[in-house]
Image 1 (cartoon, rainbow, N blue to C red):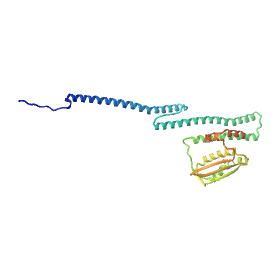
Image 2 (image 1 turned 90 degrees about the vertical axis):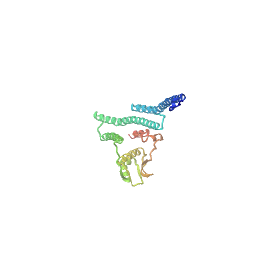
Image 3 (image 1 turned 120 degrees about the vertical axis):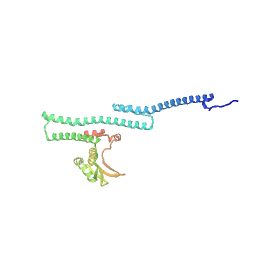
Image 4 (image 1 turned 30 degrees about the horizontal axis):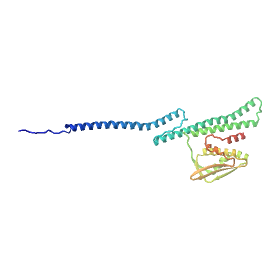
Amino acid sequence: IGYYATGSQVFGDDTANQALLQSMTWVLLASLVFSLGVSLVAAIYFSRRVSGPADGIARALQAMTAGNISDQVTVQGSDELVRIAESIESLRLRLIRERTVRSQWSQDLAHDLRTPVASLKAQIEGMGDGILAPTKERFERTGRELARMEALIDDLEMLMRLESPEARLSPQMIEARPFALETTQRFEAQIKRKGIRIAQDIRIRTFEGDSLLLSRAVSNLLSNAIRHVDEHGCITVGIKNEKGTVVISVHNTGTPIPPEELPKLFERLYRGEYARNSWKRLK
């Protein structure tokens, strides 16, 4: 009489299913667009949080390269960027100190060189004009002024050589007692002139170091100690091992250094007001 047959059914053939698929497609597309938008906004936000401080660091470095070191470097951000900013700020403060020290150098050098040059000029012009007699004492005084200039130039040459990146130490084993004795003997004339007593407090036999540079450093300390010790005072040179470190000390019985000048002791070529006044009195 007849037949009834159905073909293979597809999910999308049904109208309701088609509406469901279409809805799911729009939801998927909307989700993708929304996700991309959120990701883009988040990327922009986090990149600005990172690039903003980085740009600030870059601008600070460019300003320092151009010679502007007056602006403080402050950055907020990740720990790494903060540490970089702190290092740059430390470098900026060091550059400021270096600039201040160089300015003080120029003033000190101009003062220290101007005095002996003016004295030499006056002596030579006076002898040339016949106003001053070319006596032995005058020539000796002229020689002392030249020696002062030579010592100052030697100090500057040594300082420049030590600050060079190519500078290298030459460590060797040093006998403690001979080292102290040889260093103090260089000032024998000044010691006898002021009636100073030299004492030694040597507690080790040998130590390792650069003999030339250590001798120069201790000689500077001894020179200052002799200059500022009272007549018939005492200077003690000590060498000892303290907690694994060799300590070389020079102590005198003179007037103590003012407390406000103690933080500046290790600034290069620094001389306090007391030292300047004492030098003037000696001259």
